[in-house]
Every structure is written in structure tokens, then in C-alpha cells.
Length: 294
Image (cartoon, rainbow, N blue to C red; front, side, top):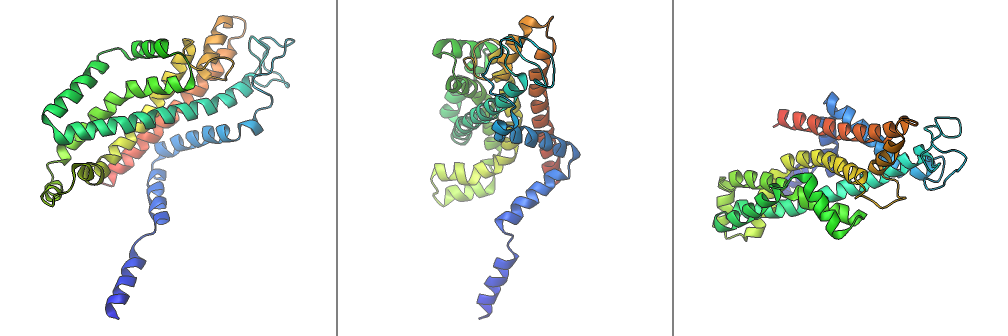
């Protein structure tokens, strides 16, 4: 009876998953920088979710009587060179950015984590081959790699994700490898090896949870880089094909009329900048607080 009551008390003392989640979230809120970044991110996420309700017009509809028209009651942020509502295109462009950027980073984190764990854990020839291949990729300038990949497979949403994944994987793999090289010398890793655990179990159950913190912070920063990459590809005409709302494409189209409608360039630039700044602030706040609580 006492053993049963002891087990019950232990279960009661163990925090629930929801309470642990709230505890981690409250740590982030203790950082003013992180809270500001989180608010900016949440704002843009809500804009993307409720885009059909927030957008005053169809982002693809054209008004031939309102070409490069400035701000007015009918068009709050004006219109572009085809008479399309800039505010509506800006709102729907949020969906493009907030789908493609996290998806490409998630893919690069997955591939990079597998390569980094494999190279760091096994070492030797495996490490040498994997890292030399990744070093060869990193030797190319980032923009040049984007241009080569997109020019080879064509501009589309899927191909943009593939390009960003390919370019971002080496950096993540190097980070995971460096952490794995340190962790694999720990006593609990040697104990798992002594028990005869499979290498996959050791890599993904024993090592991966201990690299999760730095990996999450790095991934948040890389989402910002991915947003810049998507904007750059759209500006160069290698992003999403028109007439899909794309912040980078909007900048490229508006720059041709910068002397007659200068604000048309400003709005998508401010959107890109604010979202990237929000992600960087959130990552900095998260890193600051997690370091303090270690």
C-alpha cells in the first residue's frame, strides 16, 4: 500500500506536458528582446492565417484606372503598375514567405542533422568524406548556388525550397557535428555503447536531445536567412512565377517605377525587414534566457 501511495505521489509531483510547455514559454517572456520578437512573429503569422479576411481585395485583380496610384481611401497602400492593390498582395505574400521559409529550414535541419550526427559519431573516413563534400558546397558563393540550382531546375515554390535546403544543409551539419564530437565522449554515451545499443539509438536518442537547444536557435536565425533568400530570388526573377504575390517580386516590379511611385518599393521591404528582425530578436532572447537557466 505504501509503495502504491509513493508511486502516486511521484506521478503527482511530475509536471504535466502542458505545464512544462508553459514553463518554457514563460522563460522566453522574461526576455524583453525575445518578447518583442515573438510579438512581431505572431503578428505576421496572424496576418497569414486571416489573409482572406484582412485583404480588402483580390491580390490578382487589376484596375486599369488606378495604375501606380498612391494611398487613398480605396487603396490604403496604393496600387502597382498593373493596378493591383498593394496591401492585398502584401497580406497574401505573407503566406508565401511563412510557408516556404520554415519548410526549407525544416528540410535543411533534417538533412543537416542526419549528416552531422553521422559524421560526428562515426568519425574517421565517414567524417572525412561527409565534411569534404559539404566543404565543397560551402566553397561556392551562396547567391551563385541559388542561381545555378534555380536556373537548372526552373523557378517554382518547390524548387525554391530545394535550393534553400541544399545551400543551408552544410552549415547545420557542421554545427551538429561539432556538438556531437563533444557529446560522444561523455560517460552516458560510453555506457550506452557498453550496453550494446545500436548506433542509430545512440545518435537520435542519446545525442540528438542534447544538441536540440543550439539547433533550435540556429534554425530560427536560418528562417530569417531563408526569408532574405526567397526575397532575393523573387527580386532576381527566380522565385515564384507571376502573378503569385511575392515580396521579393513586388520589390523587383516596383523598382522600375521608383521615381513615380517610390512607396511601392518601401512596403515589401519594410515587411521583409520587420519579419527578419522579429525572428532575430526572438532567437537572441531565447539564447539569452536558455543560457541563463543552464
